[in-house]
Image 1 (cartoon, one colour):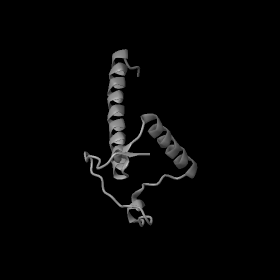
Image 2: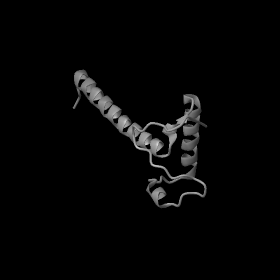
Image 3: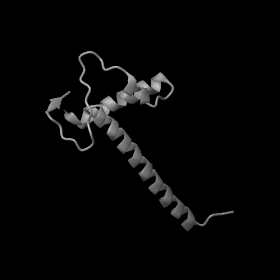
Image 4: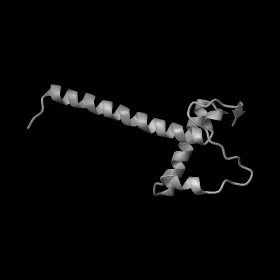
Length: 98
């Protein structure tokens, strides 16, 4: 059965909305993880931050199977590292630079 052009256009609009919603969920998830890691406390140029993220992506692509990251919570904190919890919307307590 052939679809009319108007039906196809409606479907494209619907799919674009679904894509926007999925991207928003992904961005919120990544943002929460970045804040938990303390990224919100650092003053980093966008270009440097993008390069760092691209490096992380390359690492995970090379390492093979995906990890949910859920095991991280049970891992011990490295010696000398401070364990901190950053909540969304929290303000930085200092001006740090990487």
